[in-house]
Image 1 (cartoon, rainbow, N blue to C red):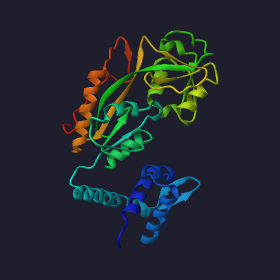
Image 2: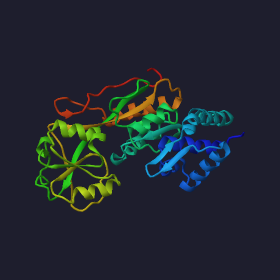
Image 3: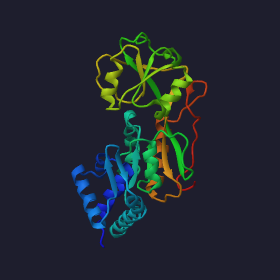
Image 4: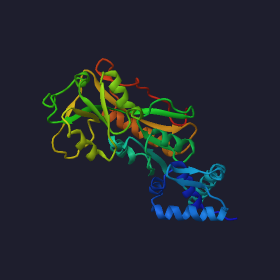
Length: 314
């Protein structure tokens, strides 16, 4: 039996995403094309690999058994292509925290880090899984515990955070705000607060009692929702380019200034030379742009910053 690597790759990505639309997006193909590849693979193997129903997509027992060797098949195919080309494949990098625009930072160092291939991460757990499975080499976003012991990370940027609120908010005219001044306001979150570690810790630390959950449909829609009720506010890194939303105000936070920590994350022992290049480019830019300035008496971080290990030395 000869397996089609494209079909196996489609299976592996769908097994990791458990969502046909997202899996198709990561492969840059249509959902219809993805479904056809998986159907042909199931026909060849003579068994169903997924259960499809009202509760979403799940692996069958056969699918669970097939997944580990399927991953090995895809990895071997990629290694064979790299060997023929006679050069290293691009460094595969994923990002998460999309509402806070992580690509702003990565774009500032990408040109000095060699060839990169970008993925489509959704959140820290999905990116962590991709690193553990060897589907990507590195990731960029906000890291918080717990992390698997085989993963290493280094903080590369500490970014001040602003409050965003309606211009009808009682505090909208202030030139700056202390975080505790927002105690009686309503924190508007782009998802369940227990899955948004930074906002959750901010609310706990500064006594924000009132919170509400939205759906992340992109920064434009999210900020438009903030302006719909005068008591709402949210947090956005100060360098994020804000869309032209009528009635929106961004106010700096001081005493202390919350800092959002961006980290480079990788699996220990990854020997891709581009990983060292990316880490070095981040270090260089951090020194040039003062990305790692932190004073405990002036700033607030959920966790104290750590320099972290060097790639290849962890």
